[in-house]
Length: 186
Image 1 (cartoon, rainbow, N blue to C red):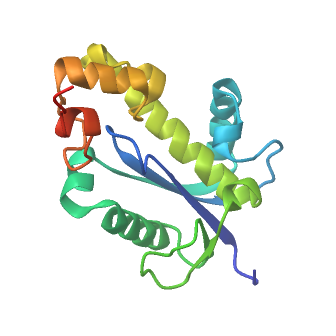
Image 2 (tube, helix red, strand yellow):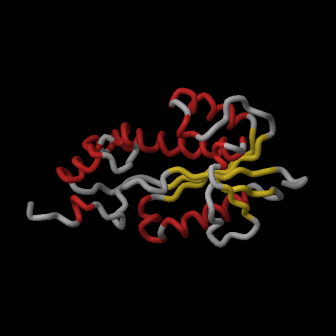
Image 3 (spheres, rainbow, N blue to C red):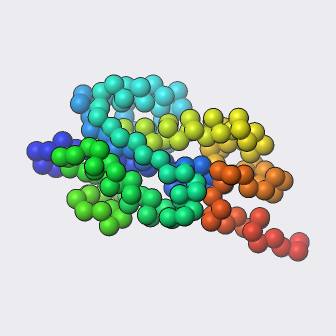
């Protein structure tokens, strides 16, 4: 990377059946011990790091509702999120976890950057904690689905709840669920 500050970017919620897609960009102002891929950290550790990241960085978090994901698709949401982060955190070099910049200029990509680059690890944590908190709040509005446990991902318990109750307003309507959308005779 060059002389510009590094903005790490990651997302949470690309694959769930319900809830938002959340993206974060982070420019660290001070080092933070213990940063790594948010999926490798306990919830307690993520929560503690979340607060430190907010204190010690410039950051931008953008969220796309399940309706926006349905209307625009994941790729367009990711593209819009990358552009929003670039606009909010100007004058940086940008590194996005993954292998595609989704057509956005001046975005570098790296597979597993969330486990290799502190700024991307921090973005991973901000995105995941933000999304997890949203799903816990939504679990109080839609208690039958167990969002507080699986955070909207397609677990067996979630699919069983969908079979019993159908989709609720925060489910992604365009995400097909075999057991629900392609019932069999047996």
